[in-house]
Amino acid sequence: ELELVEDVWRGEAQDLLTQIAQLQEENKQLMTNLSHKDINFTEEEFQKHEGKFATSNSRERQVMKKLKEVVDKQRDEIRAKDRELGLKNEDVEALQQQQNRLMKINHDLRHRITVVEAQGKALIEQKVELEAYLQTKEQEMGSLRAELGKLREKLQGEDRQASQNGEEVKAEPNNDDCLSESEKMAMDLKDPNRPRFTLQELRDVLHERNELKSRVFLLQEELLYYKSEEMEEETRSPQPTPIIQPKPSTQPESGIKRL
Image 1 (cartoon, one colour):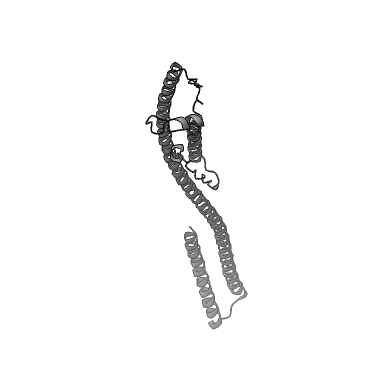
Image 2: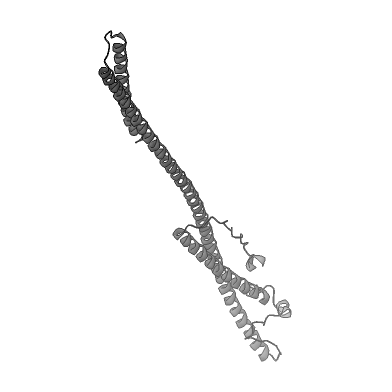
């Protein structure tokens, strides 16, 4: 658009300059004719030629004035276009800065989503491992209960046999604390059906199982929290915040392994 305006201005200026050159050429011819003319002009002819010169000068001044007005007008238009172009450049720079800021936020969000997904996968794997470990513990507890039942039946049979022989045996068959240290020492070490775990060890195993259940519940709650946080991040664009890495959980030592 500026080039088009400049071309129009140049065309008008060229036309005006051509007219000025023609007028100047006419003035030169008239001055030459006047200087080489030998006849005496009358007052009337002199006034006539003087009026012609005045008309030519007036026309030349009008052309120069018009040319100046055109030049001033074109200069104002060019300045206005320059200001408009400067404003457009500022808008473009602002849009570029906003685009860069949005790209950075998008990159940070993608990184956070990747980290949260990795944490979720790690929690799921840890949950599966804990569930498998808990299932193994439950199977061990079932075996311990079965062995404890056999031990109770054997002790009850021994109590009945001792009563028939007139021996006094103090026993509590319906109590979980029926195994004391003295009774364990009195049992035959070569008996294949002897108890392999003490009552305290059974209590430790039960306590360990309850702790594992609590840990599984906490891991499920933490997994739900991360999933809800990921869904919120997809619906809005918050400022990047530091990711809190979960503390690595140490696997508790199994009661069976300690035994």
